[in-house]
Image (tube, rainbow, N blue to C red; front, side, top):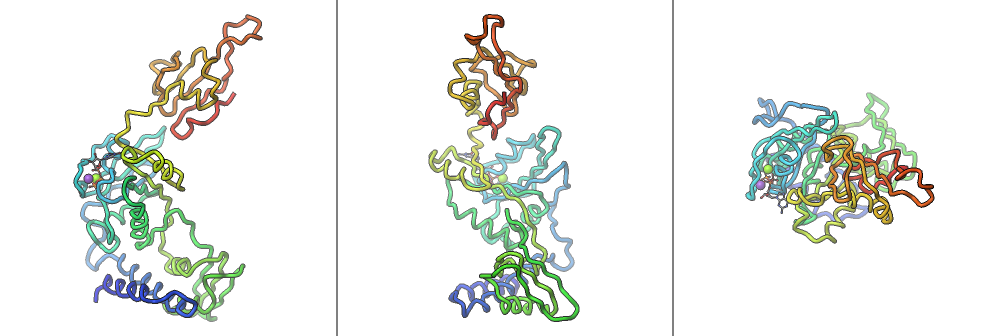
Length: 361
Ligand SMILES: Nc1nc2c(ncn2[C@@H]2O[C@H](COP(=O)(O)OP(=O)(O)OP(=O)(O)O)[C@@H](O)[C@H]2O)c(=O)[nH]1
Ligand SMILES: [K+]
Ligand SMILES: [Mg+2]
């Protein structure tokens, strides 16, 4: 029987087993068995160099970001938009068949963005190009999980499971469990706080499954049996993941709002790239409703300005990261000496996330 069949068999057994105090130890043991098999699955087959298929791209720049997602969620469209590189996009699934690198220039930073083939459920077991895609994502510094905002929320869970199956842990920190194998002395099990998921017996059983008979274990948090297995396996990769919900142009604003409020999530539409420009008037309204009527003119530095600084009116469309200085109309108590009074000695910097930031004065 192959490794995948063995995993399936144990998963079926777990599904059949009722979860209660009496079965807890048995279930823990089964979890450890699966973890061991998954680790075996990750080892490259004998005689191969692993990876392969021209999938691995040379690292470049200051950081590497991988685009992971189901087919046709818009990964390639996004890469083409964010980098100078063109990656074929089309309405049919599996348009992208290999790894396509692009570069994002952000100030003096170069970020390597990797477009990858879509992955599907079962990717971790080798379905489609899942194994290669996952190998590349493990080599990156951060994962952008691209999701279709109009599709089921279940997709996020399926992808997270696939990545977890190969030892990736998204937006988690390593469990606070001290674990050290010893030559002799048996197993010493301690905790700095009361534990509700794992007791000494369960810990012994898991260690026994790994044929570990001498070790020091200290729980510094109320960790689970999965956490314990992660620590024993020792090969987990803890990574940041941003959930990117694309295609928000096809859903309602209430749904967009819900998605945008989830942790580590952003909402985008590759189809709306030309809309939604922020004018000087929008910018003033973000600072204070009453500001706009007092504006004499503004000075703008940055991508939207033709010369530095450019004198602009309220209808001028700003670009990300522009610096704006607002010059207000003459105030009554100004004694008529100056024609206007400048209030913003510290210019405000505009960026997508900071459009709402108040103007520092
Ligand atoms: N409505 C809408 N369609 C989009 C958006 N972004 C991309 N698309 C369309 O979605 C389809 C799939 O886009 P791709 O960029 O090929 O998707 P992909 O994730 O790279 O697909 P695979 O390479 O097959 O995995 C194309 O027809 C795009 O034009 C968007 O924001 N809104
Ligand atoms: K596609
Ligand atoms: Mg693609």
